[in-house]
Picture (cartoon, rainbow, N blue to C red):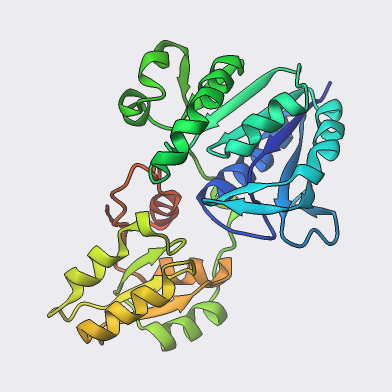
Length: 296
């Protein structure tokens, strides 16, 4: 007998890549042998085609109507959400996405629910005053909350008083889910970036702390490669130019094959996040697939 699980998040492949998206991908892949059929519900700025299949998982995309403070809204997607909930045996929310709290009630969800708590909401303090009553009700209503580490569970203001109700399940990666780089893929990357460099991979967002990494590079000669794109990209490149950092290279967003080649060639993975918006850096685990030290 199979179990049908609907994963709900604010964005997913192929529209975006990131740590939470990778966690969802790993869950979908790893639970297939246990008879679990997964689908993902997510808004998209251009949901054409509406349904895409990624590694045996259907991704059902609805139109992203607007964004407020990084929170996407898809009011036109509510009917599709209800259809997907009717298909599912279990609804798995990935927090934070405040609109998912609304979907839960607008969709009249009565199926068993799981919520994986990936991080606190840190920056939108004024909006949090409006959102907190809905958030508290939502967290109380889901059947199970999962956190990715004991440290985050015990230090989160939203989870501390729920600690006895929160299960801790660390994030894990299946090595077979990543492409193994061959010499034909590694050699061009070596020619462009060398080897023995310190590597960052991820979205270029404020909470990644990359401005601190660039400050640390000033006056040094060790090579650093920054792979990824995001809203801080232009500002970080301006900072690097202002500091005269000839030892830092921006690789932009890279495909998985190039990322694996970079991990093969690097000296260590560096991850300077310092905000609570970063609860668990999946890149650190990806570096461990290749036995690379982590500076974090």
